[in-house]
Every structure is written in structure tokens, then in C-alpha cells.
Image (cartoon, rainbow, N blue to C red; front, side, top):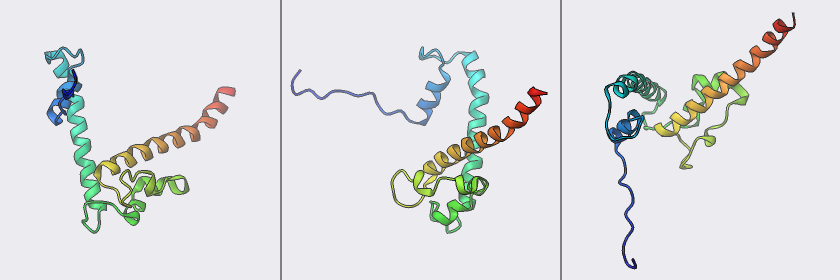
Length: 133
């Protein structure tokens, strides 16, 4: 109908997102089995976020609430990656030349995956030579 404003789905708050993630069959009810299976993962995710927030705050030397280039360079994952580490701009979604916590999370995820791939590739020749023997 002309002149009517379309209704979009309401934005989900944190608890709604958690419920939706736990409700595996998407029936709107959380069964005891869905709760049991999801609760352990949820606890682990919360513990991980707490650790990452603590690390973020420790790295944020100037207490600005964001990481500048020098603080980013001090990340253990960046140091471990060395020359292959993407620069801060690769994760600076809002282009303000610093990383807020959500951007930091994206950087940690990407650097962790990159490091895992490097380690796996480093192990491959050794495994291949063992298979040939």
C-alpha cells in the first residue's frame, strides 16, 4: 500500500542473540538439551571475551579506549607474525587510525588464523617426509 512504512524486524539485543544462538531448532523454545549443549559454549565464549578485554586494556597503554599503531605493534600475535602481519589499517573498519575493541577482536581472529595456517604449513613438509619413509 502506498504511503505505508515497511516494518523491519526489531534489532536484537545481546540476550536475544544468545537465545537465538542456543535455540538450535529455532522453535522459539529452549529445550533442556539445547540449554545444556549451549551453556558450556556460552561460558567459554564469555570467559574468552573477558580475557580479551583484559588484554586489550593492558595493551592500551595510554588508556584511550583504543589501540594506536604502536600499541597494535606490541601485540604478541603481531610480533609472532613478523613481516607477514597485516598493518593496523587492515582492521581499522572506521578508518580512524586506531582499533576499538570490536576492531581488535577482528584483528585477533585474523592473526590467530594466520598463525595457525603458518604453523600447519611449517609442519606439512615434516609430515610428508615421514609418509614417504
